[in-house]
Length: 104
Image: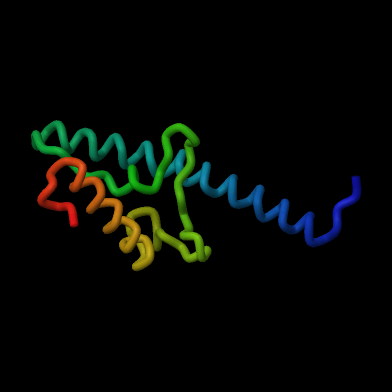
């Protein structure tokens, strides 16, 4: 089967994207999950882990871009404005499930 240059580039980008989101999961999620879990236990409070809103433990990948291909993370610790917009919406949904006073 022959591929056109466009198909090959598209396939290459798709492979790079999958590698990147799996790399992010393997390098970000475990490190912060362990740190947050330890802090939560020592302080005896529930901690909201922002990575749990972006990372999928079943697929073992993290969402790095929104649907417009805009980055959600500035670096491994900080979200971009677009990332905080998504995080804010997810946080409201998270809180609403725990207490109706946070619901619209």
